[in-house]
Amino acid sequence: MADPIKFKGIDRIVYGVGDMASGIRFFNDWGLKRGASQNPSVMFQTLDGTEAELRPIDDPHLPPPIEEGSTLREVIWGVETEADLITVENALANEPSYVNRDGRPACVDPNGLAISFRVTQRREVMVEGAAINTFAHPNARVNQQSTFYNRAEPIEIGHVVLFANDVPAIQEFYVEKLGFCLSDSYPGSGAFLRCRAQGGHHNIFVLDAPDRGPGLNHVAFTVRDIHEVFGGGLHVDRCGWTTQIGPGRHPVSSAYFWYVENPCGGLAEYFADEDYLTEAWKPREIDRTNENYAEWGIGGGIDGHTRRQHLPT
Image (cartoon, rainbow, N blue to C red):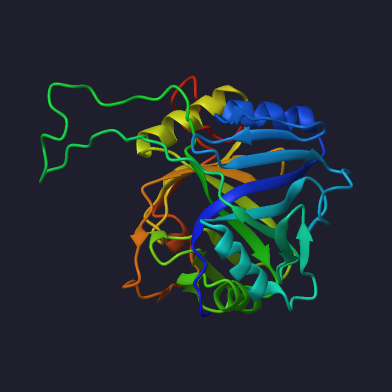
């Protein structure tokens, strides 16, 4: 690609939702702020302005779904400049599904997911995580108690994870057409891709799932630190939402996580402390095992009231 596209990351995700009232309640509890909305759309924002849009599942303005039920219907990627949009247009012009949607270059990726592109609407935010005392640096925090969070305030949408039937085709599309970088892979069955050379470990992860077909696994929301992962997870548990697994830690990206069932589709994840990569990173081939998925993880989560693990009844 002659002119690399300067991506900023995911700018907006769009859900088609069967129960809008539950979806609105979920994202309020999740810690997003209501943004400017135009009926029947309901918009939420993270601290940096990344958006999660909810639309009724039968809204004719939604792109076609990749699976039945409430799910992700579109990912809008943010780029730095109008010149980047022209580069995107040139890269995708020969795609059979290419259109201009509301002024945005758009197409359908090989997994059937609608994607489009706009100049980013993210804003710079100044947030810091809690200082952590380590053996080598024992005085990062002196005469001061560490931070405890009553709930989370997600900073950005960090990545989406999708089930797929043809991982190699999806990887080729994002790498060859759009200039994404392969970070790591499960050989033949999974690809971790980031939208720019310098950045977090992945912005999209596609995972082979021949028995279920294409679909949404989860959308991940960046929070400040591991303590906010804990505080956010405990809060949404108290609100009555169901944890699938978490807290826990991923060996692949080093990130701490907490996954919660989302009525808008799939799961929602709080995560923090993922690996930051550069052009010097060499993609690894990693075995697809439970041990490589989670160094540790608490199935069913932690009860926000008792502060003990939810146990099967």
